[in-house]
Every structure is written in C-alpha cells, then in structure tokens.
Image (cartoon, rainbow, N blue to C red; front, side):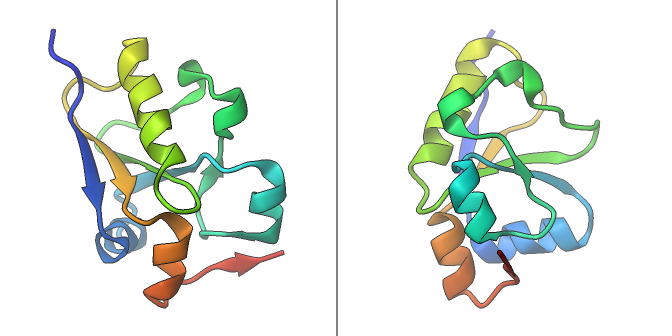
Length: 112
C-alpha cells in the first residue's frame, strides 16, 4: 500500500472548502496558542500530544492540518500517514504558511 499523498494548499483554497463545509480543519498548535487566536471551525489537536486515532474525518470531507507557520502541520501529516490510520482514498492537506498566512490573507480569525 502506498503512503497517503500530502499536499500544501493556499489559505484561500482552505477558506473556500471551509465555507462550503467540505473540510475538517485540525489545528496542531498548543492550547495557549489556540487561546490567543484560532481559525473559526478548526478543531484543536496539539502536536505535543498528537494521537492519530483521534483524527476523525467524515466521509467525503477533506482533511486539513494547520499550525502557526506551516511546519508542525507537516509533522502531524507525516505522523498520521505513518500511523496507517489516514484515509487511503484522499490526500492529507496542509495549510501553507499556517495561521500567519491565513491572517495575512485577511481571512477570519477568532481572538481570545
């Protein structure tokens, strides 16, 4: 079996998916980062305690990981891919540039 495909997507693409209800966005930052600011609709699953078994993706939805700048979400995607629990019929997506790029693009962020 081949490893899952991991793709980097733009903030605009992820935002469009979220607006249309087509994606599950998982924030792998730490709770203190989440408490300061977060992308609406994201689910917190910190990389420091990452458990691939906790990643739930309803059928037909795209799985997207994000972090602060785009590095930790890559680690989370790799951990999920290595776990054997990743969906085999769809790629794993990463938010390129993380929440920093999301904010820079002027997309919505919940504060505090």
